[in-house]
View 1 (cartoon, rainbow, N blue to C red):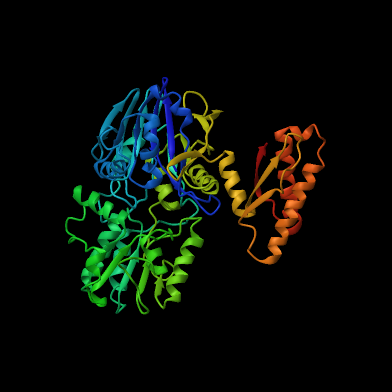
View 2 (view 1 turned 30 degrees about the vertical axis):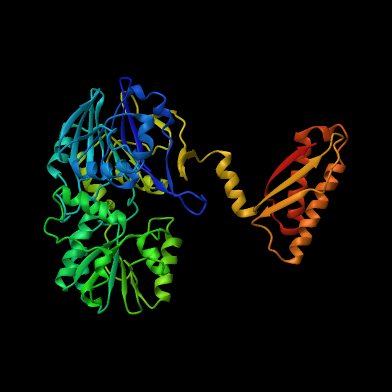
Length: 532
């Protein structure tokens, strides 16, 4: 989830504002994003937000965080189309000022002179951003690779990158995701050839799942299907959104309109390919629902085939495995990148990083994006390319690039926000800690009624969630909890029984100790106290 800030002469430029997705350690959450508190507090100095491309980890937070920032947004036309669709869902479409910049376009924001440099990636219109100030020229690569045959859009603008290198680049702030992968990332054209061959091998219904934003992959599947006499249907809302954005910007113009999932139901099995959302095992995605047998219109039968034309994003292995197991158990053949060349990464492997450094020749390398081990590997590659200085920053680090030596000069507060139902909440508060404890330990509520003397008027009432069954043994455990609470209150000195906080704490501790002794669990416990 990217959020980058460049500062010069008291003004700030934001580059990208993305989301990530919650995992099993974040119960009840789907989407997480950076906390922009630092820049929100001085948003009068924020000259604008520039989006390098339309992937969720680079623009997905705009719809949630723009009301805190209130700044203009700059991006290329395809990215603007994707963003507008998201803003429409949040009733922000007419509020956010979006400025479309053509591929290779230049523009100026405050003290920053900016230029988009065309790259290749796994989505249309990926850009590096050249940031010029009197202090120097910085190249922010965004996500990229060197694909000689990207199929959608132009190839990387090598001439422009070389020209920037000749001009003199102070720092390259670059993608590190595949810095530990030797060789090159591979070309989208190779995947198309494999898919064309693969779709001819299977006699029944075929479903292909891929990242919805990979428009070149959608076109490749359509071309491969047509070569094998099959029609293509889209199954999943995000696929239709990307299809609309792509066609409105001149992409997929040679691909016939896709069929809907409703239309697909009327085609013979050997005449259909379905492109489905859900390559990462997302529980509400089309493929997960199909695998679970609860999709309203689409089914897969024994003898059908599902092709995962994607990679596993770290952290999603269990979810993907769950969907694949459901499919296999139904007698459906599953094909992954381990079985055939059905996916290429959108990020640069080691040889591509070397090529970029040979073109750009920066004085400073600042590896970003990816985990720290990837960034450190990237730094070693830059050092091997004779880049004089390198620095691997952490979240919140303020790095001085110029003038003077490159170094971390201070830190600003960072954090994470999450969508919790209809609210935007911080992840570093007691709310999520309490929810996580409830998931692992259950919850209990004790109700006490005391008279003016601090004596229990009736037996404590204890309700428990997520700890007990309805059997006789558990009923006896609950009676033990009630007795423990009664004894804890009786054991308090008389003055203490007049103090609500002391009474509640005694009851809370009694509940937790009793369950810890009997079940090895310490439930999150709340105490209601009524005095009469």
